[in-house]
Image (cartoon, rainbow, N blue to C red; front, side):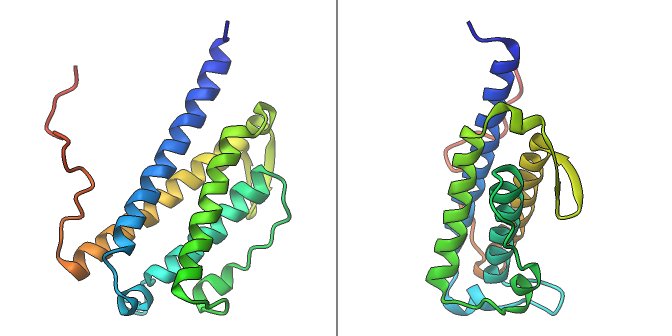
Length: 172
């Protein structure tokens, strides 16, 4: 029989992976709508291109989950994410982002429970494993929203993420 603690940990993992998966689906939906010019275009000097956002998310997820939670060496070069020092072709930028995000979801599913309460210093912040996961889910969601907004703005389309859902339902 599972303990309450085991049930809560399992549910937390499932919910975190679900939210990551939802963001990845939305990002993929945006990317198919963006042509090459839009993928690399920075709307203004204070906004990032979709390519930059993907590189930034890849670096953040790698630093927090792969390194901070999983214990791999921290290889992040945050400055390069924004300056284009690591410029690659679009296919590689997209593939690298989705690969690190999927690996992070796998690690969240399998990391030992003790890692969830262990405190680590990541990017200068003192966080538990739970805090690391919450940060990544929130940060990914934040930038997913930016990509969705930018895609809707550029293409003037409804991306249909909630097609088939009645979002006007009341709670039971």
